[in-house]
Image 1 (tube, one colour):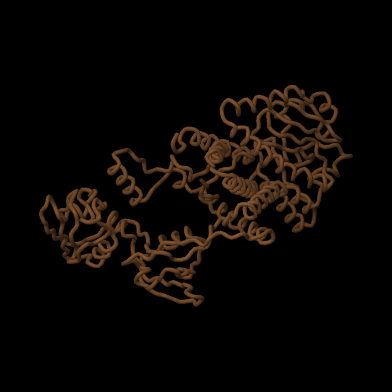
Image 2 (tube, one colour):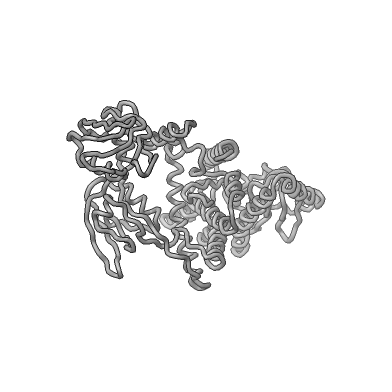
Length: 541
């Protein structure tokens, strides 16, 4: 399966204080007492051991052998993404003349490292992140005067921005390559899915009244366009009841159609009338499956097991026609005839549909999708870039959702609660009307791993790899320390103030430490919360 791209939580690269650009020496004992930036002498005496590294790798392989090979596979993929992120920082820092003293995968105790030139490269025990250390990130770094010209803070604004943004750029590059491979090698139809046109028109629906025909391509609804079938559904369901203008293309000609947007028939019956219908026997008709006590259907005198014979004088009604008749006769007397225990029973009452139920527009068409085609290498490159933009837009929307309390705690509208009640009634099993048991929420690295493990093909893994990398890249650019975007914001503020005052300005990092720790604790809290959900509340677990 593929995930809703609007719901992935990437705290895997949102690092603790020994972050990509500002590592507190006290987080690693071998920095203790070392003058800022002058660490080469201590590095040569504490490089861990190669046997320890082999043992560490062997332990991971053993977990794969005993438990699941997905575990080392996912870990390797995670470390690869972290490595590439830090490689971006490392390469641009070196190209800008900055001094990089460390390049490590993992945090915590050192397992193994080696020195080459002025940089120590290695692996640490906790594979939950990675970092490079560039000297002179802030005014807190005490750097020898002879090396001040090689500090991050001494470089021009454009070089600092290039270095800071390089990590996210590497994620974007990896995602684009993955999308390109999907287009070229697997006939991938794109994030928005394949093009579609109308295949089915529901009788009695808005589409039917407008004259929509199979083969029509719907281009816009009320001047709002959409990229795929799902977006079309979202546009329609979120419209207010009333006039609707549709633009379609039929046989190469554009047509403008106008009509009235209706309700989804099941919503009229379920939310407005309080009735659930089932098809017990197609030759007999629809049967009353469930009624909500004291709702209108109950007041009419309908009982569970009644079979609808006619409504408002119209025989052989289905859900669509019954919903339309109820809406047309709202406020008037209305007669429903049912077959009950072999007898014909006539029920008459005044239709007063509930108005507090949420409105969800119903258009009444079904899609047929255009078959996939082989786009070729050149076209695939362009499609990969277009898909990257579409996924990025969806991820930006998901970031906005992450700060919405109802998105996290599962607040639901009455219609959703009614559906949960309906499922409970029909299946005689408890159904919680919350989102705590699904994956349409922020995910931790554990959740991402479980999605990968549930993937059914290489295509799905590549698609997830692209989405994850795009989200990491965007999330790291959020303008808060210790994320890369926080450093970019500081560099931009320093540049703007320097231009305004016509003299160099540097931010005092000590004033930002409390805010940085608030963000760190928030990220840790979100990480713990999502990991807990992904372990104990995963669907089917």
